[in-house]
Image (cartoon, rainbow, N blue to C red):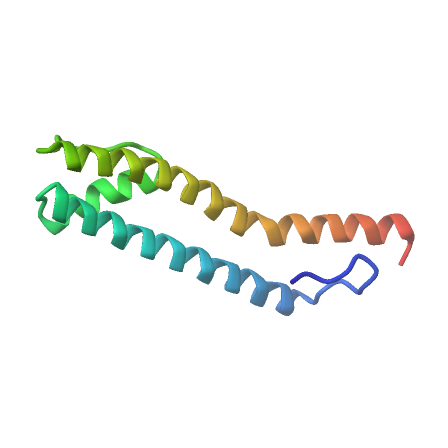
Length: 115
């Protein structure tokens, strides 16, 4: 996916395109995760869409749930979704940081080898 350390550094435009792809992948991951969370809260928690949206967003953002849940099934879903949301949060940050970290390391390698 990334260029070899012996390859030339990407141009600014190429790097911007790479970042745009990573942002798009992250947005898709977050939107799918948000949809799954909303569906679960609406189905199992019997919440209106706006309350399901709020709970899903709060968990995806790392904050925590907002309301009480009416059933054990809804509570189990909320616990599983909270674990999943934590992983999505970490994965999203990693997907966004990866191209920047690679570029910095590539620049440092080029400076060290004098190319």
